[in-house]
Amino acid sequence: MKKNNNADQPVLYKIVMLAAGLLIGFITVKSIFLIMDVKTDSMNPALKNGDSVIINKVSGIEKGDVVAFDSPIEEGKILLSRVIAVEYDTVEIRNKILFVNDKKTDIISDETRNEKIIYPMKFCFRDNMPPVKLERNEFFLLGDNFDSSFDSRSFGKIPADIIIGKIVYKK
Image 1 (cartoon, one colour):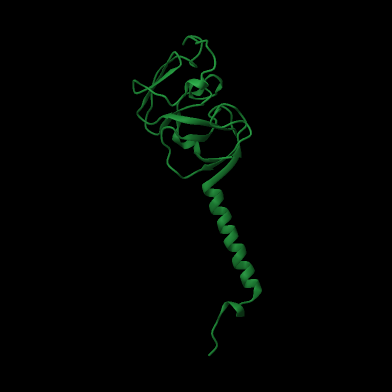
Image 2 (cartoon, rainbow, N blue to C red):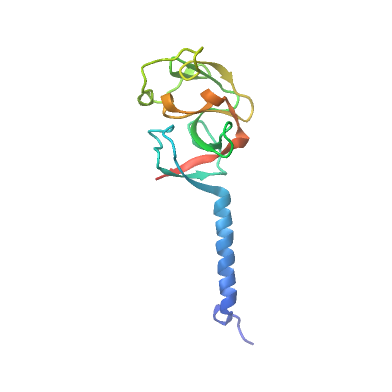
């Protein structure tokens, strides 16, 4: 009776198994992670133009996370912003000060508020914005570069289904 061991297996079998393992690994990684380059300064200083990021598509999203999402305005464009508020929160901006559920928050730092000018609400919602109540599966996102970011102040709250995932690594 002859024992079957790896040395007896044909080389072709080993090549097929290696290729199948690589293919399964590649598909798994592609379905969980996305790698992209940052192309704006809207998240400066956390992420700078030219940085590379890895996005985890399956992890949960919490306040403070930086996320990638499909632009609600421009089809095919991916944007990056920080989660400021989650479902059932209320967000308001008064003279460049962010309030979540009527509490002042420090998620956006003073160093990202570069301009001394404060625009009135009748001009735009960049520096002053009325309260916005989020519903189930909705998020409010802001860029860290408060004075130069295209975010929820421009396009409003976003549904959870357009969020691709959260940034888990930057280089």
